[in-house]
Length: 516
Image (cartoon, rainbow, N blue to C red; front, top):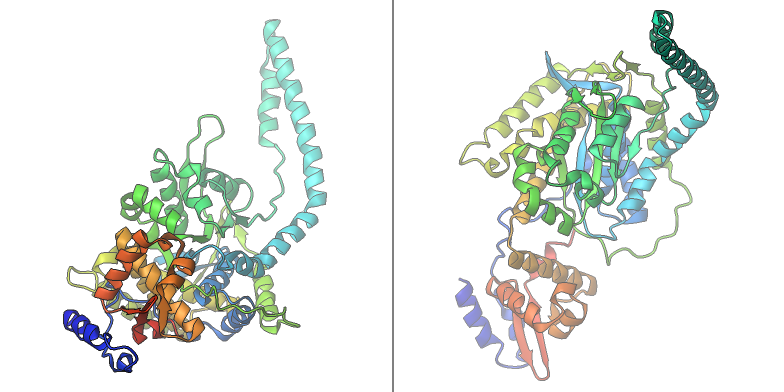
């Protein structure tokens, strides 16, 4: 069909100024990637209190909607995870913690969005630190006294041993002293940006058992020295175990070993395409093989850059104010800490109707995991989707009403819709990660052309414009020409040669795909 189309177009465009362009019968576009374009984010699946806050932030910041929603759900997850575990069935319960992965270019305003949603967490940490100062000063005095006594007992034991005297009295005193070592006050430390998995587990054990890795530059996480070839297996497994809520045994040579039990972790990380492709090139099979990315709710949103006219700061933000009040209420809820220093969350079961809906979602996903199923290529991710649906539903329920006794059918349906959307995003993401560099350039150029035509309300772009203003990787003819030829072969564009000008007509379908 495309060959016939190209022959027809050549005939139509040989006569200048005949109006032939309007008669072109463009072919239907086949997606450059088999999985197609991103579906619109299911905004209406968000409970009104969350949706209204996300809408309000989008109107001002103009960042991609899925990115804003991921930050909103991430901060709620961080506030909820110490309070509740979700019961998916009798005897089948686990954390409410969510992992979000946002793949977006620099300049998409992820830091701005995170600052808005996570500012209450920072304020809470500061407030708790100030409240803890008297207890911290008392602890520092007590530990100083304790250390002086221990040093004295050790000195006496050494002196008695040297003098060949009985040391049992001071040995007993030293052992009793060890049992009475002052315990440092626990001061909430909830947010981390670039902590290694080892440092993270230390802090979750010794400082505060609930935390979140919130990184606007995900390369700090995926590209850290903790992710080198020698340690990546151990470190990715640590993140997996934290998502699962499993105990983690830490055996140390130079410091005291411990078992991390009852810790909870949320992750909201953004990374650009290049670092994530580099990570997958070096570690992709391992990361997928042990299920690291299977646990993430992934999105690669369409850029809003170029469509963000300046907007003055809003006079008021009633919806964000309400969102923050609900968040603070959760942060100030008491929760139990067990003898090993971990949390003891309450179990939040599903209503009977929600339980039936969750089982239906589980079975629908399971039916697509076989060899001829739609989800076979991402069966590792799909196998976690029902779990994520339940987690999202529980996060919604707890945020709306921390006194809830069960998850409603509405919140389960909402959680399933959002989990299903992220599942399709994962399918797109893994397809792109495995795509050839040539195909990725075609995708980048077609997206740029689509945005350019939408912004300038045109269906034509000159080659000069592409060379001067197009994607930076394609601003020379040797790089640009083969990409243009491939897009033309696929019916995306059509070369038009005129006197002293070379330009391209654009398939209307390409322009429309980014119209929403």
